[in-house]
Image (cartoon, rainbow, N blue to C red; front, side, top):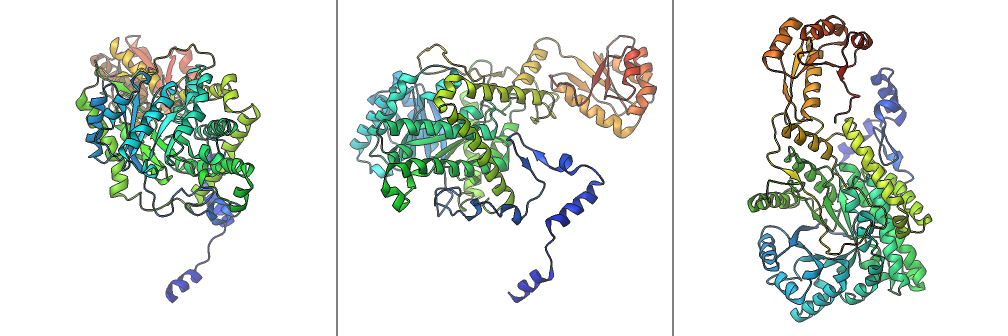
Length: 619
């Protein structure tokens, strides 16, 4: 121990200014702010390094697990979460058979999604036959109009089975406002069922019945701070409605469950869940403090624990090169686990598409098994369930937690100034905000400001769709309300590229030939960029090692029956090679220059009109 102490005293920690001075030397005069400071989409800057002094004014590092404001999670002794899989119920008996099967394969949380006209005592008994509801988590999603009926059936069923009410864990996902914000349908009359639902299930302390489905915003392209801010306003709207209807604040808060999405931004998603619990606890605290003097005296804020079910995003999933979706969902699952969520659903990698006809049962079983195993690997092999909030104390994560909380709170306050979440939905401001973000992100993907591996960057040159087509979402509610408000346009980020590639397949697949010549490094770099650029549209690309003359390259291109000839060289050499190559080709194929050389105006004057470079749209 003495040696360890001596070791520490021998070294002087460099100051922040010393780090900055060293970075300035390494940058060789480049602008520090432009080169190393990241301006996030969430509205704040991220520095290239953080030190203890950066956290001096933050309160989050002092928080303890399981204690208000629960930034470090709701548990004190572990980070265990429920491994959940959802089942679409079309036949109750078959759904039960599937549920029993996956319960033996690592699942300990089931989510049954059934249409409203299927809700009955017989359906529930069939679905839950052989399932011990006091040993696993059980969740239901159905038409909000039938939620109270379903709750009454479940209470009767649980009573007949003799379950300990405290051991029944699960939810009914009653969320009429989800349909309002996503589809623009006016279902405000259904909101009155919320208090009835809570009253029906009040004796089941761990069975929640009011849902906040902000994962729908995530899947529509919302930035992290948008999902977080609107989720808080969404939850607050339900909390206000319940307490206004006379529901005790403790019961009301403990009835609300948050279904949140998880995007690919690894560290920021960890911070999002930490910030979400922090802010929700503060919101609930205000209701508790206003309710009774008892709570102000005892500071009993157990009801302020935020219950989060996380689902990996579909927004960044792709139809082409779909196995890359496994990489995305795996890091997303890790973020959710390290963010200490209550339960998690990993979306199967083939969720965005179906093959010609119906997706085969074998294909569905395989992708669902992989999705389950993605959680089991980090839980059983990497032991993510052992340590509570392992990100705590990380200067970077603590900074992100605080920054996200501040920016999300601004959104929350803005919604409250507009009259609350419901009023903002009716006015369409939330839908406009999310739709604008979706449009921006699609534009950024087209310009490669936002990368999708395998789609707008490094696509599989030879892959074909082979009958895969994007799924079309359909509401299973059975009620066809007219759209009264604005709706959110939920379109996956890769959809534009996929449509282009499929259109190319269905018409004619052009062949693009790389005429590489001159400087070795530049021609290889530009050929690779051009191949990626054109393959994103499904074009066949032919790369080459290099040609001695432009005539040799053009002849090889024509022999390969190329529709497009892309000359790849250095800026300086384009003045020498581009015009002779263009003239020799003589209109027998489209001629393209890879890059934006200084001599572009001269090339355009010679009739060369097509260029590929980083500022070009990819679609």
